Amino acid sequence: MLDRMVPKADLNRFIDRLASEQTVAAPVAEGPSIRFQAIRAAHEIAEHYLPTALPPSKYLLPVKETLLQFRLGEHIEMEPVLEAPEVIVFGIRPCDLHALALLDAIFIDDKHDGHYAARRRRITLVGMECLEPCDDRCFCHSMETLEVHANYDLLLTDLGDDVYVAVGSPKGRDLFAGLTGAREALYEDRTRLRRAHEARDAAFTPRLDVSFDQLPGLLAESADSLLWDVLGEKCLSCGACTNVCPTCYCFDVGDELDLDLATGRRYRTWDSCQLDAFAMVGTGESFRKPRAMRVKHRLNRKGRYIMERYGRQGCVGCGRCARACLVDINPIEVFNQLKGQPASRTVR
Image (tube, rainbow, N blue to C red):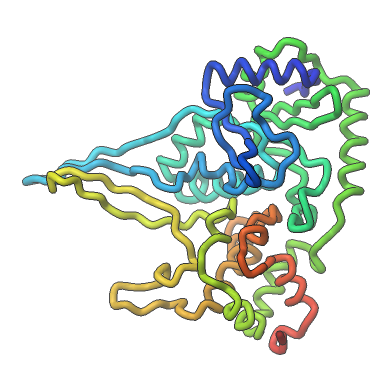
């Protein structure tokens, strides 16, 4: 599929038209925070922004979603509920595109989840390349998620007055077909893109003291590190880190009964491995009662377990968890400290 070039003014008019015809979600500034929400016009989109407070994965894994409805009687009647609105999600950062690729591997390729798959079919992913670091909390360069070569429908790169558009799927090609002013990308356009990438690469510096593919081994060797106890004393077990993480997908399932005591619904909602009750069993015991065990589990999930199972980064380096943490637990600092000190003798 041929890449395209489009003047930015034409692209904005195109977004205006799309937003008037269907749901377009994009990063919008609301006070000090930026979040994905439905827009009515292109001028509402935040141009320079940190990764949004909540990742775009919320459109595939909502905070709470109904799985089925039921009616109680002589026989229990159940009917699945598939809530899958069509939406174009515009302005997704490369780190979040990598995160969505991981969720696809988990909820479609590994254990096919009908609700996730239905939403995935009806969502259009329009990425926006990062040409400079978001802030000092991001480390996408070290996690090799700064570049993205798949799992998008369109990928935009801002080249000043023009936007380079990489077409990643037939859905993206068909969406872009209605844009007037677009033309095929020529050799000189690809040269401009390459120079923009070279400038981008020079602006990002490595943050990890190891390569990301060495993290599983580092974390395995650091299983008995005293650093986990130190982090456990700091952690508030509030779950803020997991709520904002684009690769966290743990959920709980519950039932709601209506006032007639005959009808109701089954739903799933976000859960967090950092909460005390997460690993609690029916007899009241918790297999991860100490906070140190919960912090250790989360960071091993991000840097080790997911990589070992799916071959993909469990942490995409977006920096959301570090920004959200009230006690400044930053995964990049944890990984580097584990690397810099003996695994069994890490100190405060």
